[in-house]
Each structure stands twice: as C-alpha cells, then as structure tokens.
Image 1 (cartoon, rainbow, N blue to C red):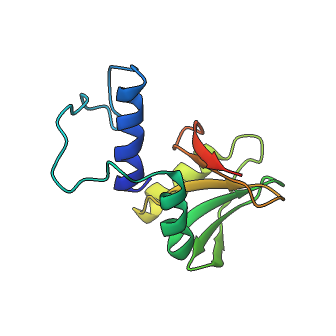
Image 2: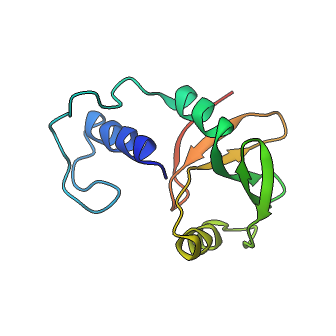
Length: 122
C-alpha cells in the first residue's frame, strides 16, 4: 500500500475512534505534518494509481500487476483468498503498490494487505 493510502487509512481509523495501532503496528500519530495528505480521498488515490502502478483483483479471482494502464504480470494466487499470494509477490519484489479490486462494471475498491475494504468508487 502506498504511503499516501496508508496515511489516509490511519487517519480514518483515528477519526472513526478505532484507537490502538496503525497498519504497520506503530502507535497512532496524532500530530499532522505540514503539507501532508489530509485532503486526499479515494477518488484521488485511484486517479493517481490508475496512471501509475497497482495490483488489480478481477471478478474471476485473477490478480495482475498493472503499470501505466497495462497488465504487466499475472500474480499467482488462490482465487478464494488472493491476499497471501499478493503479499508473497510484494515481499519477493520488495514493492508494495495499492491493491484494488475491479468488478465487471468498472467499480473499484481499495483493500489493505489483509483484504479489508478501505473504500471504493462506483
């Protein structure tokens, strides 16, 4: 997951009153840095990712790495639970792009590495 998306998720967790730990296991940071990503939303994350790089989960259970609008690599996963395969691929590449599911209508949902929905666009 990109640093921008992780920052937003951590802020959403704080705003929703879900106190405890950030996604990386660290304590929540209650102080905002100047020039941060406070205004970034799911639509902006998707707009940035679709022009860049991300992992895409398709309706049929297949998973691909997408770069600049092109499927570059199929990621081997179990269709029932693709996240262990996605995480293994990311670890092997030392590369951690955002994970989006895209349905046959073009709707997108951002997921964390455990498969939790972080928000989506219809």
